[in-house]
Length: 415
Image (cartoon, rainbow, N blue to C red; front, side):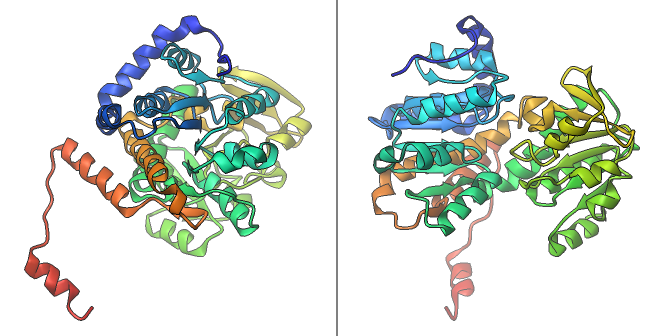
């Protein structure tokens, strides 16, 4: 094992406190931790993980380690790593390569360090680990049983690789599981985006106009919470079906170039490039607040802003003001990176409990079935999705109906 690369091991007690809080509120992962500790489903396996490195992720790592996994951990975003949590994981004996505020070179170095360990299972958030091993460590590919991808953005990258015939081992589309995107993307993103914006700006949302770019599950959640906070909401979309859905949910719909002049707060949630581009910025409302909740820091064209702004200044912690060539001022939160993590603690613990239970069980499925999988992109098995739902209902203390034999016969007649 390489030596861990973290900011300061002395921060570990603070990180341990955060992890313990998460442990108390993650019933599913706590149950799986105890189960894995007995059954050791990952014994002898190396797991490379690149996920936003905060307390919920740490508890997932400890759960995998309890199951016998040799963990190699890094963050999936330069600004989302919490240094005290990274230190706590090292104190638990796990190998970590991450710190808050990495340069691009440091970030890539940490990705390389995790992959060079020679993983059998990959847990990815955005596709950087998979891209790295296919690009720079192809000799390690034969040892990879498979992997799991957490995000829409990562799945888009995987699908492009698969179409080109470049994906060389099975990847589970964790994001597509019902117990992931129904709750994580909608309720998790919906709450955590506004947690990040509100704690960073200390401004009111009520009475303002919020522009949400993208009306997928994340966009639905962000829009719903903005409406609940009293904002007028404009949605921008490229999909006519989703645009109609937004209208019927009570929101206005228009192109970004038109919305640019109305928005007080912008939130991009598309996974695409230059969603707010130079033309939009030339027409942007003076004083607009720009935030991104997609995976990469390219949805707002930060490169154009950096190259063309007349001046920039720190307007408040984690907020940079830019005077544009056309005279308007815009304020960018978290350097245009994921606002819910760069400016907050990410999704609520109970939400990530469901998502990470899907991750852990999908990794277990790969260990048990990976050699027999023929497709390179696979969905979370329905039995895994259902198990997580049933466990969650049980912890919520709720019961549901079951079909009687007569009802099953009725529904299946003619089949």
